[in-house]
Length: 115
Length: 108
View: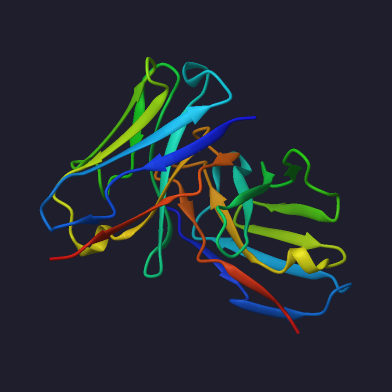
């Protein structure tokens, strides 16, 4: 059974860079594709992007210039990096297994952007 | 971008009743690549249906997905107490993938 656990800073200032990691256990990270999705009261569920087994990424154009998703196979982690954050990036961030219709999700990590 | 509009926003029903939730897309969803998720308070979304009508692993047959093109439906045949939650549709046929705004299924 795949288990996902997100971690990262809970509070950021505007213009800072958000870095989140998703620790994967119970399966081989290189065998699957991975997605990031966030949820906020204002925007609901928002798909951010995915990284495939071959390392191909697909990002939401609304974030494309600021977002990077990567995989660290040696540490079995999926990472998200979002630059130049604003209050609009305040949300609960989920990592999930699979790129199209994610079947396994982490419990999410709450990120607040505030000065 | 494909916009998904779910209706109703809130559905008030009693246990044992049936529920019909709607998801309408702003344009045809390629391949009918439409999924449904259930989210209970404090939990991550749980996959119910993919490909418009295929049930996810361990999903009871009380949940049925149907539809094609721009109109999709999730039917719950007989509501159990644990079915009262928020339901989201999700299209993955066209990037950027998108989610509906959700239908809250509440106990009447």
